[in-house]
Length: 474
Image (cartoon, rainbow, N blue to C red; front, side, top):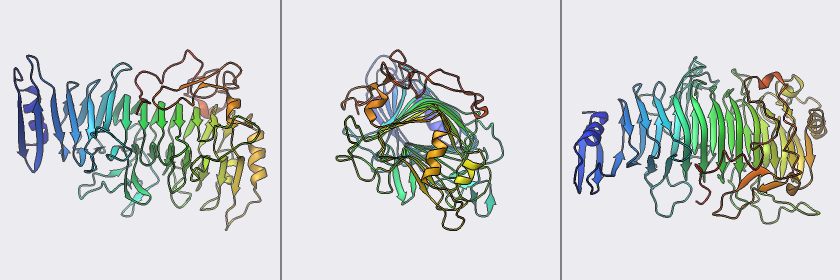
């Protein structure tokens, strides 16, 4: 009997007045069911292992534990009811992988979100592996000599190809994540081969990603490897490495995104808000990484308020608000980047020079605000094909595109973004903030975005899209 049938037995059987613990072993997989006591269906604690090969539904009155890597395969759909809690078993690298052709339908609500978290009573980042969604949309990656197919990082692939992603269907549909929290995830399989809080591989734009928070990730909060998926209302909260990492030809659209950092916590590889590559070699392979971001609010580790910007007290491993490198051509509009050692870093030091994407008009940085950065602009030239570009060229590019730079983090005038631990931040711009106005959507790249009159992720003090379903009391 396959996993589906075992679940059907547990979930549809009579659960009247019971108090028991059952363990079922089928096809090398174990599902443990601990039922409570009651006259209606009791809360059950179920352990998920191995591969889910036919469609199942996770019920809100149950808690589900991921023991090791759990794969949804064979075109199956994993449906998760609002309010369901799924925990990754600590010390066993519990994680969830939605493979190509399969789907996840995780549609929570603002008052009843779906929560992926640690099973520990005192959780910490890295307690479990994370969530990976793999699709059949285009990527510039290759695997075993096959171009357009990639192997996702983290050691999750197997002999059946369960860790492969990519294809030719830009509209591929991997399902829905809506009103979902992912907490304490991330697993370092090898250096530079980690599982992030939420990883996308070749996910198509038929997929819905809306209202998703990744908190306390042990690597990147969000990382996209190729694909075309569009994302709205996403939050990266106090992750370890990068907030938003784009690679291998990702070309989706992202609007209304927030990134917040803990000043004391950064990664040995150097932590950024944005990190973007075309691929690891900086090649000219297509599709080229060309994601478009608008209305992003980045709150970095430096909270400068006075006469000199002071980095004392922050982790020295923090680097850039944006590091655009390795032939990436991402574009960013209507956003705020606050409190990093470096603001905009155009890094052309490896592969096809990234600065060529600026001069050709493919890489656009327009109508943004940088505030409270020690150094606003930085440039690293290619060692093989110098173009005459410079740090001054980056500044000229910035100044020519309706961007502005402010001296201190406090100049951005947030209402309460630097809230004490255990309280909900207020990411809205206060009276006099430059973010309250100035939204501009005339660039053709912004076709399909929601046109708003403000910059950053939040309109004003009445715009609480990030409150209620999220958790900052972690």
